Image 1: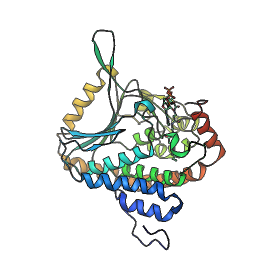
Image 2: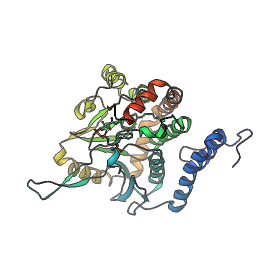
Image 3: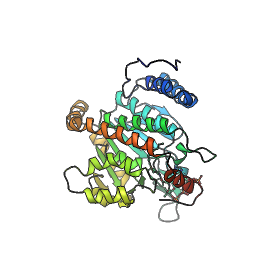
Length: 331
Ligand SMILES: CCCCCC/C=C/C(=O)SCCNC(=O)CCNC(=O)[C@H](O)C(C)(C)COP(=O)(O)OP(=O)(O)OC[C@H]1O[C@@H](n2cnc3c(N)ncnc32)[C@H](O)[C@@H]1OP(=O)(O)O
């Protein structure tokens, strides 16, 4: 792989991970090992997948499960021990899953959390219960090594930008089934879904993570457009106020709130019905609805990621990270 000289390669498309990784490597020669790891992950998985039907199992990875059934491709967080914190590998797995879902036979793509079976001594011997968290956001270990030093900020910030771009550009209806609390980047993404169904045990928040106001500007753009909710949104983004599912609905961040007891049945019944609607009409409608805001979202995303890249190495951030990792601080 060339690492010197001018970069004359054309800018790769948003789902063109192979070329993006190569360009990263040219610019970040000092970080080649890390980039190579991500690149090899991309190429090995991409080559083993290609196009597939909506009724086949599409992708296996430990913390992100992908399956397709009844016209719905489901992308499922499966890292309950870490509250579904999103590691660098998971960012990559999700991008790959979105890339595949954009060309598979499915009609709708849904993000959700794996349900866990727990034993309860009440009316039923076994009861289904949702995973603890929908997602606790960015894995705080992404940017700190075992010695407590900040690492790979440039690559992480670039990866984050590509990740969010994939959501902005996703061509099919994209739905979030949020059956637990969501934090940080997982909240920001809600504004990029076409529908967000939340159970009443969900809440949304930004952490004490000092980068939250950068990351939140994307969300702010979305919720505060014409609806006079600027101050409420700012309270969450600047001061870390946690919103209940119903407050998030009032902000326009959640489409509908369901009681936890009927959440799964109601939501999946509805989604299966939606997946029978004409796919092309939905794609064209989505394109028309989103067309005018897309460029703005890309611009804000680029600005946010640049701000994250600049601000993250500062002491305020490193202290917050170390405090969390040494168990002195939480949300
Ligand atoms: C370089 C790229 C920069 C990107 C910047 C953009 C930022 C995006 C964001 O998403 S910022 C938000 C980051 N998230 C947080 O700050 C949440 C941190 N977590 C918590 O505050 C708490 O864990 C909790 C409130 C979510 C849950 O508390 P509790 O129920 O008490 O569980 P534990 O704290 O014991 O957690 C269990 C287990 O999970 C690990 N964990 C939880 N969240 C994260 C996380 N975000 N990153 C890494 N690890 C996480 C936690 O350490 C425990 O692990 P352990 O059992 O100790 O091994």
